[in-house]
Image (cartoon, rainbow, N blue to C red; front, side, top):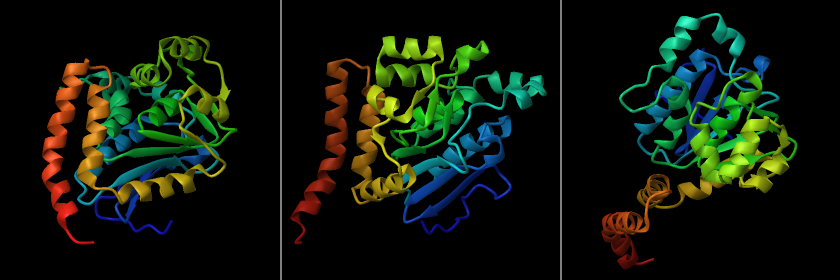
Length: 261
């Protein structure tokens, strides 16, 4: 993909890179020597990148991937353990109700455009939670997935509990979490954690983003809001939200239909 950086791109010294081309943001974890394990600084960069993209005029879709041999091998626990004060600060929630660990993932849910994760290699712990923060996921069949936290004496606390139960149901979510078992990308597709299993996830992710970018952005944004905000709401509230979003979209849709082709 031929991308050109924009003024909103994350600085090149960051381990999170971001470039834009034709309305599609190419966001990459760029710490291949550590299998893209997330440091506290990278968590901050993920949050900052998502917030910056939210203000990007003309943005149509986002693709998140990892450089090197892996998508993300989880949190860099060794580095975090050397700075317990920074970890404590990162745990403090903001008025949004999320702390740094959670917002590094959930900030991508807040974007008004579809976010697509293209994963390969290690998808462990925090890597799973970041992938699940995307709207759509494509994985290689041999990728190594694991909800790893319980194996390390912790729990998924980067929005993963909510995302897991949305995608696979509570029993499967509990089993994957309690056992920390490793499973393949093919298994992730079978379980519903990934919608597409392919040998070329990054190429197909950009092709999918390009197709989405051809649709009316207001309609795509409205559809994302409906799914995300009404996923567990009752029928009456969901139907009311559908009507409201459609009322806002109808004038533009009718105008387009009346124009000669």
